[in-house]
Length: 452
Image 1 (cartoon, one colour):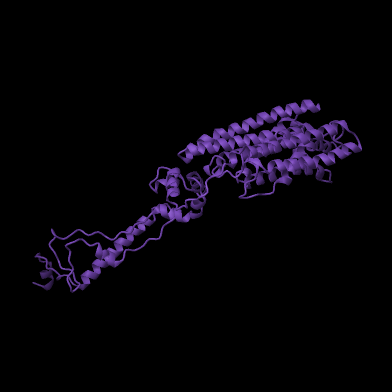
Image 2 (cartoon, rainbow, N blue to C red):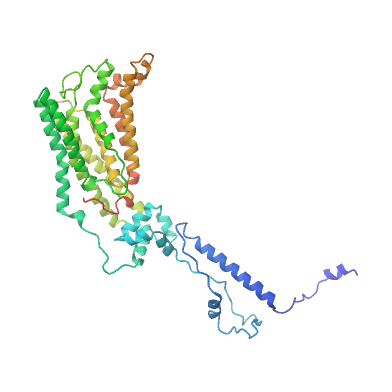
C-alpha cells in the first residue's frame, strides 16, 4: 500500500507533545487578544459622548488575582492538571466608567452648576437625549444629571443659587422702566397733535430720541434683556420696522400716485399722514411684553423643576408659550383700540399686530440666547419693505415700469397695509415655529440670567 493510504487509514490520534514554552506563548497571546476585544466593546458603548482612559491590568495584578491552588513551578512553566481540577479562567477585563468619562468631557458644566437642572439643560444643549441617557443606565437625562451632580467634588462653602430673580426691588426696577416708553410716546404724540409748524418739528426731534432711549433702557433690564451668551445688533432693523409702521403706508400710497410732494408734518391729515396710533400702541405694549416674558420664564422654570424628561418638559412648555403669545396679542389689540380712540385715528390692526408679534418673538428668542434666527428674520423683513418702496421709485426710470407691477397689484387688491402685513406676518410665523422648538428646551430656561 502506498504512503498516502497509510495517511488515510483511521486510527487513534497522536498527541503533538507535552506543554512547552511555545504553548505558553500562544495561550498568553490569545488572552491578551480577548482582553483587548472586551475593552474595545465596553469603551464604545457610551454612544460617542465621551470615553474614559482605559488602564490595562498589569501582569503582576494577574498573578496576584490567580485562583488558589494553581501553583506555578519554580521553572516558570505551568504543569498540566486534570480537566476536573483545572480552574476555569477568563480573559482579562478592564473596567470603564462611562459616566465618569461624560463628567470629564463636561467638566466645566459640572463644576459651575448649582443644581442638577443646569447639568441636564447643558447636556440637552450638547445633544444628549433620554435615549442617549439609557446607554448610561439611566431612565432620562435628569437622572443622569443628578448622578453627575452628586459625583462632582465640592467644597463645603460652595456658593448657592442667589435669590436675585425673586427680589422685589429688581422687579420694581424693570416694571417701572417698561412703562417709560409708553409714557414718553404718549407725551410726544400729544405734543404733535397740539402744535403746528416749528414747535411741532421741535417736539418730533426731541420726542423721537427720548422714546428710543427709554425703549433701550426698558429692554436693558428685566426678562427682555439680551442674554450675555451672544448679542447681535438688531436695533437698526427694529427702528426701520417701527418707522415704516408710522410713515411707510402713506409713503407707498404717495409714491404710487406720483408723490410725495412734501415732507411729513406729523399730522394725520395731509399728503403724507403719519400713523401715530400704531406706534403709540407698540410703545405702550412694552410693559405687557415684559410681564408676559416674565410669566413665561417663571412658569417654564417651575415646570423644569417638576419634569422628569425632556420630551415631557417640551410638551408642557409649548402650550405655555402659545398662551403667552396670545396674551400679548390681546393686550396689544386693546392698546391699539384705545390709542386710535385717543388720537382720533383709524387703527391699523393687521399691520401693528403682525409687527408686534414679530418684535415680541424676536426679543424672546434673543433674551434666551437664540439670536441668529431673530436677526436673520428682522433683516429679511426690513429688506422686503425697503425693496417694495424702492421698486416703486425705480419704476419711474425709462423702461423699468414693470418693477412696480407686483407692488401695484398688491396695493390695488388689499391696500398699502398689505405689504407690512405680509412681510411681518411671514416673519412672525417663522419665528413662532422656531420658538416652539427652541424655547421649549430645558437648556433655554436652566440659568436665569435676567431678573424676572
